[in-house]
Length: 170
Image (cartoon, rainbow, N blue to C red; front, side, top):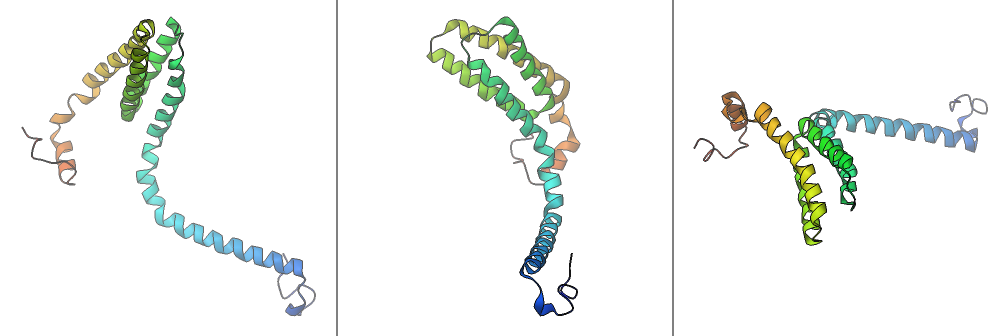
């Protein structure tokens, strides 16, 4: 890359227009890289602690929505019922928010089938939801049941002022 001292001889006043443009672009790139680096450095730790840890939850929620949108089809075979049930059952074990996504999707489709008065579809949906519920019950007894009795966890959250303490000890 030519510099002002060696372009068109030693006289900087005689720099060609193309070379001026290249120098300006190079300066803009250097400036934007510096700004980008400062911004990224400032928020890098915040992004690591607040965004990255929830990215798998978001991905699972989006995948559940994309996969389970197919439930709305009128014809659900036994294999599809098992597949949808297993997908939701596995998602519960990998993501807490998946429970709420599954509940929202499940209630929506159940209400739609009830309003359509489609009894066969309602029964098939209940088959899927039963698999989800059984997975949640197992997950609750394996992982969630003893959380309320963990004093260290309670103290950790209470010290941050995150929970109203008036009704937690009753």
